[in-house]
Image (cartoon, rainbow, N blue to C red; front, side, top):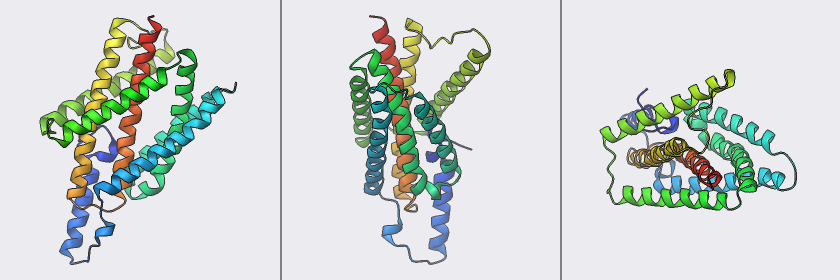
Length: 257
């Protein structure tokens, strides 16, 4: 499957298959209602809804951590369920209107848990990570909107290859560390580890350009309405990844003091 983005939702296969379906409807002379098509405003609204759900659910594990309870169980459970919903939605995008809110709900439990744990160790780290994520998002959006950064095929190839390399490295490191005493290079607060975190953050930010590009193409190709949830869910995945990586980087920098 050819990818244009790290997210399985925003891949060429999903968007092109829906484009073909839309073309077939036109060929068969069916009436297409504008209200049944994917729109930019609709995608933005649904992204905002998912963000609010994520923030609301994150307060559950946040409250648990600051009231002496262990938030790890719901946090880990939320991460696992969130991943399952991501996989299902990748193969059944038409179910995104139901799966996307569920993803935001369970992923919020994960985000709230790890955020509270980091905040207890280093007060202020969460605010800094949220601020860094928001600024990065706005900068990337501005660069894309004004076409300062153009998403070419070569750009896509480099970002996707780098993303897959990062995912492979993380997976191998996790498996090896489970069965040996080896400590992955990206752990700790060494300059090498900090450099890796910076590189990963850059790649995560570049994935935002791919997400913006695919959402825009989905609107231009007049895809079905449910693709708004599909695109919004994909964008949320990148933002969550970016936020977690900022947390990790700030943790490394704080531990060096």
